Image (cartoon, rainbow, N blue to C red):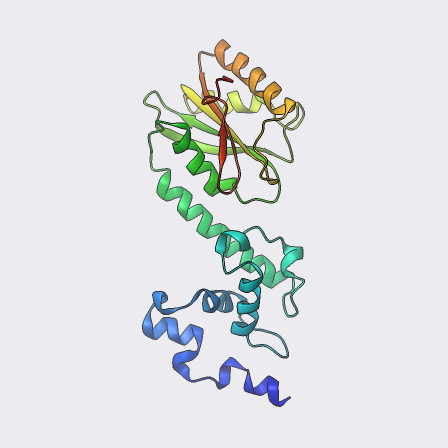
Length: 231
Protein backbone atom coordinates (compact mmCIF):
# COMPACT_ATOMS: atom_id res chain seq x y z
CA UNK A 1 0.00 0.00 0.00
CA UNK A 2 2.85 2.35 0.87
CA UNK A 3 4.37 1.81 -2.60
CA UNK A 4 1.05 2.53 -4.26
CA UNK A 5 0.54 5.81 -2.38
CA UNK A 6 4.12 6.88 -2.87
CA UNK A 7 3.93 6.45 -6.63
CA UNK A 8 0.59 8.20 -7.08
CA UNK A 9 0.91 11.23 -9.35
CA UNK A 10 -1.43 13.06 -6.97
CA UNK A 11 1.40 13.08 -4.42
CA UNK A 12 4.00 14.54 -6.78
CA UNK A 13 4.98 18.21 -6.80
CA UNK A 14 2.51 20.07 -8.98
CA UNK A 15 5.24 21.06 -11.47
CA UNK A 16 6.04 17.37 -12.01
CA UNK A 17 2.48 16.26 -12.81
CA UNK A 18 2.06 15.90 -16.59
CA UNK A 19 -1.26 17.73 -16.94
CA UNK A 20 -0.24 20.59 -14.66
CA UNK A 21 3.16 20.75 -16.33
CA UNK A 22 1.56 21.14 -19.75
CA UNK A 23 -0.76 23.88 -18.46
CA UNK A 24 2.01 25.85 -16.75
CA UNK A 25 5.03 25.22 -18.99
CA UNK A 26 3.55 24.34 -22.39
CA UNK A 27 3.33 21.18 -24.47
CA UNK A 28 7.01 21.17 -25.48
CA UNK A 29 8.04 20.76 -21.83
CA UNK A 30 6.57 17.26 -21.70
CA UNK A 31 8.63 14.16 -22.36
CA UNK A 32 7.34 11.38 -24.62
CA UNK A 33 6.59 9.36 -21.50
CA UNK A 34 4.52 12.16 -19.99
CA UNK A 35 2.50 12.56 -23.19
CA UNK A 36 1.48 8.90 -23.09
CA UNK A 37 0.77 9.16 -19.36
CA UNK A 38 -1.75 11.93 -20.04
CA UNK A 39 -3.44 9.82 -22.71
CA UNK A 40 -3.71 6.85 -20.32
CA UNK A 41 -4.86 8.90 -17.34
CA UNK A 42 -3.79 6.35 -14.74
CA UNK A 43 -1.35 3.53 -14.13
CA UNK A 44 -1.82 0.32 -12.15
CA UNK A 45 -1.59 -0.68 -8.49
CA UNK A 46 2.20 -0.57 -8.40
CA UNK A 47 3.05 1.96 -11.13
CA UNK A 48 2.02 5.53 -11.79
CA UNK A 49 0.83 6.44 -15.28
CA UNK A 50 4.27 7.89 -16.00
CA UNK A 51 6.09 4.74 -14.87
CA UNK A 52 3.79 2.53 -16.92
CA UNK A 53 4.15 4.82 -19.94
CA UNK A 54 7.93 4.66 -19.61
CA UNK A 55 7.86 0.86 -19.63
CA UNK A 56 5.59 0.80 -22.71
CA UNK A 57 7.86 3.20 -24.59
CA UNK A 58 10.97 1.24 -23.63
CA UNK A 59 9.39 -1.90 -25.09
CA UNK A 60 9.16 0.00 -28.41
CA UNK A 61 12.79 1.18 -28.16
CA UNK A 62 11.50 4.67 -27.26
CA UNK A 63 10.42 5.08 -30.86
CA UNK A 64 7.01 6.45 -31.87
CA UNK A 65 7.10 4.61 -35.19
CA UNK A 66 7.68 1.29 -33.44
CA UNK A 67 4.92 2.01 -30.93
CA UNK A 68 2.56 2.80 -33.81
CA UNK A 69 2.84 -0.84 -34.89
CA UNK A 70 1.32 -2.09 -31.60
CA UNK A 71 -2.15 -3.57 -31.76
CA UNK A 72 -4.80 -3.42 -29.04
CA UNK A 73 -3.75 -6.92 -28.00
CA UNK A 74 -0.08 -5.88 -27.77
CA UNK A 75 -0.87 -2.96 -25.47
CA UNK A 76 -3.25 -4.95 -23.31
CA UNK A 77 -0.36 -7.23 -22.34
CA UNK A 78 0.84 -4.45 -20.02
CA UNK A 79 -0.66 -4.57 -16.54
CA UNK A 80 -3.02 -1.63 -16.17
CA UNK A 81 -3.80 -1.31 -19.88
CA UNK A 82 -7.31 -2.36 -20.83
CA UNK A 83 -9.00 -2.06 -24.18
CA UNK A 84 -10.12 1.54 -23.56
CA UNK A 85 -6.60 2.77 -22.75
CA UNK A 86 -5.13 0.80 -25.65
CA UNK A 87 -7.61 2.38 -28.06
CA UNK A 88 -6.80 5.84 -26.68
CA UNK A 89 -3.08 5.33 -27.32
CA UNK A 90 -3.64 3.97 -30.83
CA UNK A 91 -6.05 6.83 -31.60
CA UNK A 92 -3.51 9.45 -30.54
CA UNK A 93 -0.82 7.88 -32.72
CA UNK A 94 -3.22 7.73 -35.69
CA UNK A 95 -4.02 11.44 -35.26
CA UNK A 96 -0.29 12.14 -35.45
CA UNK A 97 0.03 10.05 -38.59
CA UNK A 98 -2.87 11.85 -40.29
CA UNK A 99 -1.52 15.26 -39.33
CA UNK A 100 1.80 14.43 -40.97
CA UNK A 101 -0.01 13.23 -44.08
CA UNK A 102 -2.11 16.37 -44.35
CA UNK A 103 0.94 18.61 -44.12
CA UNK A 104 2.47 16.82 -47.09
CA UNK A 105 -0.68 16.41 -49.14
CA UNK A 106 -1.36 20.08 -49.74
CA UNK A 107 -1.48 19.67 -53.53
CA UNK A 108 2.10 18.43 -53.53
CA UNK A 109 3.53 17.80 -56.98
CA UNK A 110 4.83 14.28 -57.54
CA UNK A 111 8.08 14.38 -59.49
CA UNK A 112 9.62 11.03 -58.61
CA UNK A 113 8.98 7.65 -57.06
CA UNK A 114 10.64 8.95 -53.88
CA UNK A 115 8.01 11.70 -53.59
CA UNK A 116 5.20 9.15 -53.69
CA UNK A 117 6.99 6.63 -51.48
CA UNK A 118 7.60 9.22 -48.77
CA UNK A 119 3.88 9.95 -48.55
CA UNK A 120 2.80 6.33 -48.59
CA UNK A 121 5.43 5.36 -46.00
CA UNK A 122 3.91 7.84 -43.58
CA UNK A 123 0.45 6.42 -44.16
CA UNK A 124 1.03 2.67 -44.34
CA UNK A 125 4.74 1.93 -44.00
CA UNK A 126 4.57 0.78 -40.39
CA UNK A 127 1.22 -1.01 -40.42
CA UNK A 128 1.15 -4.67 -39.27
CA UNK A 129 -1.38 -5.58 -41.96
CA UNK A 130 -1.29 -5.10 -45.73
CA UNK A 131 -3.27 -2.25 -47.28
CA UNK A 132 -3.71 -1.12 -50.89
CA UNK A 133 -3.92 2.62 -51.62
CA UNK A 134 -4.25 4.82 -54.69
CA UNK A 135 -2.97 8.35 -55.19
CA UNK A 136 -5.10 10.37 -57.61
CA UNK A 137 -3.30 13.13 -59.53
CA UNK A 138 -4.36 16.04 -61.72
CA UNK A 139 -2.85 17.06 -65.04
CA UNK A 140 0.05 18.80 -63.33
CA UNK A 141 0.87 15.65 -61.33
CA UNK A 142 -0.34 17.32 -58.17
CA UNK A 143 -2.15 15.23 -55.58
CA UNK A 144 -5.92 15.42 -55.59
CA UNK A 145 -6.41 12.72 -52.97
CA UNK A 146 -5.02 9.46 -51.62
CA UNK A 147 -7.44 6.74 -50.58
CA UNK A 148 -7.39 3.24 -49.18
CA UNK A 149 -8.91 0.70 -51.58
CA UNK A 150 -8.56 -2.52 -49.61
CA UNK A 151 -6.97 -4.29 -46.66
CA UNK A 152 -5.55 -7.76 -46.31
CA UNK A 153 -3.51 -8.55 -49.41
CA UNK A 154 -3.16 -8.17 -53.15
CA UNK A 155 -5.48 -10.58 -54.92
CA UNK A 156 -8.08 -10.34 -57.65
CA UNK A 157 -10.80 -10.35 -55.01
CA UNK A 158 -9.31 -7.89 -52.54
CA UNK A 159 -8.55 -5.10 -55.03
CA UNK A 160 -11.63 -4.10 -56.98
CA UNK A 161 -10.41 -2.33 -60.13
CA UNK A 162 -13.88 -0.89 -60.71
CA UNK A 163 -13.72 0.97 -57.40
CA UNK A 164 -10.39 2.53 -58.36
CA UNK A 165 -11.58 3.91 -61.67
CA UNK A 166 -15.02 4.93 -60.44
CA UNK A 167 -13.21 7.16 -57.93
CA UNK A 168 -10.70 8.32 -60.54
CA UNK A 169 -13.50 9.51 -62.81
CA UNK A 170 -15.31 11.22 -59.93
CA UNK A 171 -12.13 13.17 -59.11
CA UNK A 172 -11.39 13.94 -62.80
CA UNK A 173 -8.05 12.23 -62.40
CA UNK A 174 -5.50 12.14 -65.23
CA UNK A 175 -2.95 9.88 -63.51
CA UNK A 176 -2.75 7.45 -60.61
CA UNK A 177 -0.06 5.88 -58.46
CA UNK A 178 -0.70 2.58 -56.72
CA UNK A 179 0.83 1.57 -53.43
CA UNK A 180 0.69 -1.18 -50.87
CA UNK A 181 2.85 -2.13 -47.90
CA UNK A 182 4.75 -5.31 -47.15
CA UNK A 183 4.77 -5.66 -43.34
CA UNK A 184 7.49 -8.32 -43.62
CA UNK A 185 9.91 -5.72 -45.00
CA UNK A 186 10.57 -7.84 -48.11
CA UNK A 187 9.88 -5.44 -50.97
CA UNK A 188 10.19 -7.88 -53.87
CA UNK A 189 6.86 -7.84 -55.78
CA UNK A 190 4.93 -11.10 -55.77
CA UNK A 191 3.29 -12.62 -58.88
CA UNK A 192 -0.03 -11.29 -57.51
CA UNK A 193 1.48 -7.78 -57.23
CA UNK A 194 2.59 -7.91 -60.86
CA UNK A 195 -0.71 -9.36 -62.05
CA UNK A 196 -2.91 -6.71 -60.44
CA UNK A 197 -0.59 -3.95 -61.70
CA UNK A 198 -0.91 -5.24 -65.26
CA UNK A 199 -4.72 -5.42 -65.01
CA UNK A 200 -4.96 -1.88 -63.62
CA UNK A 201 -2.63 -0.54 -66.33
CA UNK A 202 -4.80 -2.11 -69.04
CA UNK A 203 -7.96 -0.59 -67.54
CA UNK A 204 -6.25 2.80 -67.17
CA UNK A 205 -5.30 2.85 -70.86
CA UNK A 206 -8.91 2.33 -71.87
CA UNK A 207 -9.92 5.41 -69.85
CA UNK A 208 -6.96 7.53 -70.97
CA UNK A 209 -5.62 7.63 -67.40
CA UNK A 210 -1.89 7.19 -66.85
CA UNK A 211 -0.66 4.60 -64.36
CA UNK A 212 2.52 6.35 -63.25
CA UNK A 213 3.82 3.84 -60.73
CA UNK A 214 3.14 1.10 -58.23
CA UNK A 215 5.16 1.64 -55.08
CA UNK A 216 5.64 -1.10 -52.49
CA UNK A 217 6.67 0.37 -49.14
CA UNK A 218 7.99 -0.68 -45.77
CA UNK A 219 8.76 1.67 -42.92
CA UNK A 220 12.16 2.70 -44.29
CA UNK A 221 12.45 1.49 -47.89
CA UNK A 222 10.42 1.17 -51.07
CA UNK A 223 10.27 -0.58 -54.44
CA UNK A 224 9.11 1.30 -57.54
CA UNK A 225 7.67 -0.63 -60.51
CA UNK A 226 8.40 2.41 -62.70
CA UNK A 227 12.05 2.71 -61.63
CA UNK A 228 12.53 -0.99 -62.34
CA UNK A 229 10.94 -0.80 -65.79
CA UNK A 230 7.94 -2.92 -64.81
CA UNK A 231 5.32 -0.38 -65.97
